[in-house]
Length: 278
View 1 (tube, helix red, strand yellow):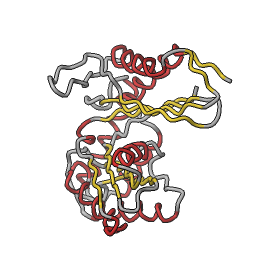
View 2 (cartoon, rainbow, N blue to C red):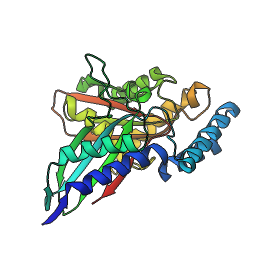
View 3 (cartoon, rainbow, N blue to C red):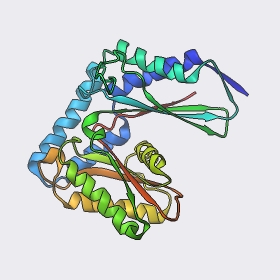
View 4 (tube, helix red, strand yellow):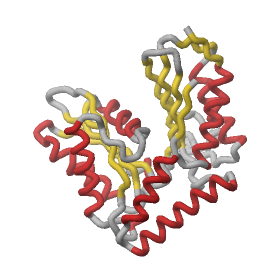
């Protein structure tokens, strides 16, 4: 049994929050570079160059890559052989609070009724799952709401089939237009229940950009959706071209015989995400 002190969790989450705002991961930077090289629109290619330069400036000068530093979704995978010495939920929230305060990041979380800002960018939305082993993995995903607001969920009839799933995702992405700051990464959750589909759609965004689902039939679904999205020609920030989306990540979960839930969770071109193993 391994014991992890909550002070370590606080420090780790604080570092993740600050780093996510300043430093894009190699997977999204590589995807943006590849998109620039294959872009067929001169205007969109120029915008991609600006996005890449913006990411470089943010990292070097330690300023946020985007002014919307998001609401944090935090996925914690807790090994069954780990004993947390303290309140894990509170440690995660304190880490987010310190990260946004000490990193001088914009605080955007408010009460949904009064619209009064909490002043700390908390509470973060925390998802906890128990897994095998004696480690804790913390994944932090700040979601700006240009992209988060374009997400959606439908309870399709099973008769819609995979064709219905593809049509729904493509329709939602095209309907989003330039709001989610494309080129975007699209997370899709298929199956489970109402809430499970939404969670797996968001968690799918954590997969390295462009890494195919290990199930061949699901990987084929990802490729079909991506091709359909990019064939529309909306392009980078709506300026046209062949890079509306960088990747589509589909994850699935068994569902009821009378149900076919489909959730779409969209991420902007910055696709901020960080993780640490304790």
